[in-house]
Amino acid sequence: MTKALALLLLYLAVVMLYGATTVHGRARLPILEGRSRAALARVSALCAIALSAWLWRGVESGLAAILVVLVALMTLGTTVTLLGPVAHRGVWGAAVLASVAIPLLMLTGGAW
Image (cartoon, rainbow, N blue to C red; front, side, top):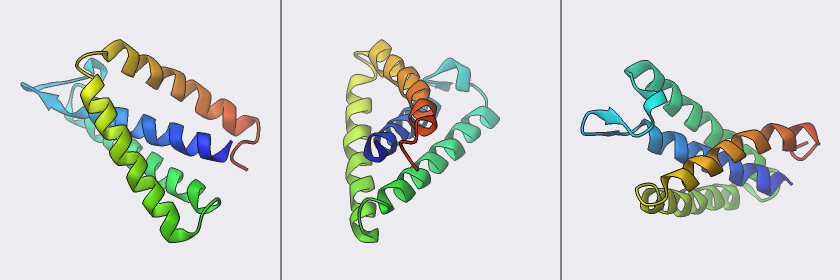
């Protein structure tokens, strides 16, 4: 459960960073329009990455946890970047499901 929670956090972080980027002066996700909302999304993504690394530290050693997080970020980032323009409903739908699943996993004791 801890690994699933960590991967869901990483996916949510990648999607937030992807949604906060601008294309032709507009954010990819309309709810993140504006500098303060985009900055909040980036800070939230960094917090999610840090929490995911902390969760992986409980499963793996320190260096292995960092490597797992970096490889997962690269893989998820590539996947979201390639699928975002083609299957944007799937990318955002999975992000909504991940944002619902994260608290549920935490409440059921998946992380602790």
